[in-house]
Image (cartoon, rainbow, N blue to C red; front, side):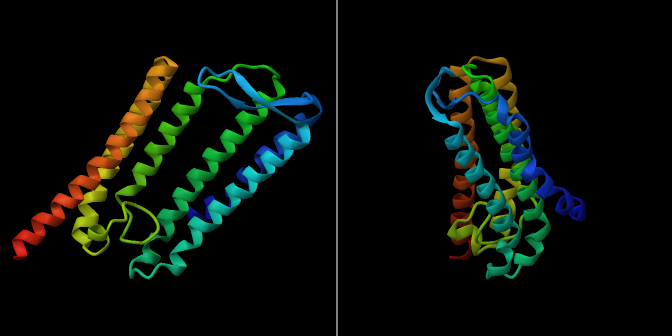
Length: 220
């Protein structure tokens, strides 16, 4: 599986650039670069400015992939190498997500004054969050990915239980965000995405701390 990911990831990274080259002649001279919460364009830039923007996103996408797939090399935790394959999959998911976002941005650029549907972007974020949650349960203790707290990093049982819980919450929460953003209004979607993500992060943190205090009391 990892060989397949390595073979296809750079193709996916450069898909937006290829798409931009194909539609370049169709881009207007002024391209929407920022939208308000109602999805209306409120800032425009030139074609050259848009090209720089896509270029920066391309470099960021490639940089994040290289960082995530090589960060285990400098992680002092003894299980760092075991996270290599898991981080590879997370990095691949991130590349796909960012490349899709870039392609959507380019498509919107070709449409001139097209109104942006923010609910679609929020649904994508929810789907990406669910994918990350799917891999959370298999992460071993490390200093770069996961819920990295003093009491999770120094206790393997705490790390395992915390990430087992977080995996369920992030996967379920991400799917819930996706469904709600598709079938509700923009306002409800904004409230849902921030509320669900906050809960999905806070509950594992509180759980891990309570587990740490319980272990500490048992040893006293």
